[in-house]
Length: 320
Ligand SMILES: Nc1ncnc2c1ncn2[C@@H]1O[C@H](COP(=O)(O)OP(=O)(O)OP(=O)(O)O)[C@@H](O)[C@H]1O
Image 1 (cartoon, rainbow, N blue to C red):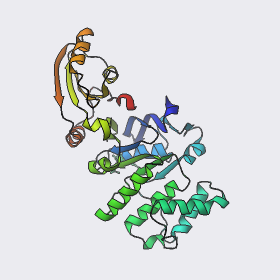
Image 2 (cartoon, helix red, strand yellow; image 1 turned 90 degrees about the vertical axis):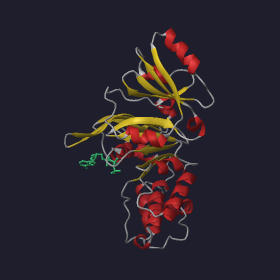
Image 3 (tube, rainbow, N blue to C red; image 1 turned 180 degrees about the horizontal axis):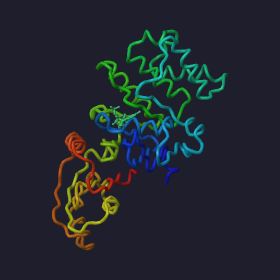
Image 4 (cartoon, protein in one colour; image 1 turned 45 degrees about the vertical axis):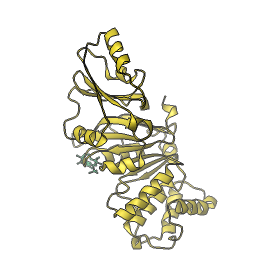
């Protein structure tokens, strides 16, 4: 149910000059979740995030933030959302305090509450001593912190960060990563990157976008990272969703006609049960293979070919 999610988007589509940049993308974000949106350059990550953040109107589909429909109640939806765009809207000639004061006003924070809100955002982002510094005089890493501070100053439930670590040196990168991990304890977060290790460092679920479509959406870390992966071939198989709903299956992904990859709950060996289910339903089991999960290999494979030729989007199992 949508209301169970901090963010839910269904059927997002966006064209640029007749070319489809985002094609029927569904996104959900549960409370406390950090969703990493991964994809090569030009995959459609920023376009998707802009639609989620309400700065770009979808050609089709709708977005709900903490129960508020972005199309019908944009102000209420945006109040519950903080957004760091790919190019943060910073003003080099303002001090950090001036800029955050301006953002606090834009976010509708009452005058008497602004000072405390700015102090808390600076504290959270490691900017406590930089209030009087001109933004233009800060390093790129600290400027990125200011960008994140403007996104959290109104204490939103959902935080959307578009490539927050792009262009940072290794030390700055570590600092911003640690900051995101800290923020994740108080917000539900969506973060994008074209670098797998960036997503693995902070996210607990990963969604891979390729050529405007979701080609992978599975939990990371915790149980799923240790989970087995089964590849199954069925001559007369069901819809992908039916496989995703089987007991012990975390997610199902269609590989090609009649072939699926199933992520299985950690510690479960469901192969016998799966073979029995296939026989009972007359799915005609051709092959059932156990594979260790390797996200890097999967990312490379998923983003180096055309999206699912059959046109059937992969399911996100129970996470979606
Ligand atoms: N304003 C625009 N006008 C025309 N085409 C656009 C526009 N913005 C994006 N595109 C195109 O839409 C596609 C998706 O772009 P998008 O920026 O969403 O991808 P991305 O995954 O965020 O890539 P990157 O990591 O390079 O920012 C690309 O082919 C891009 O060239």
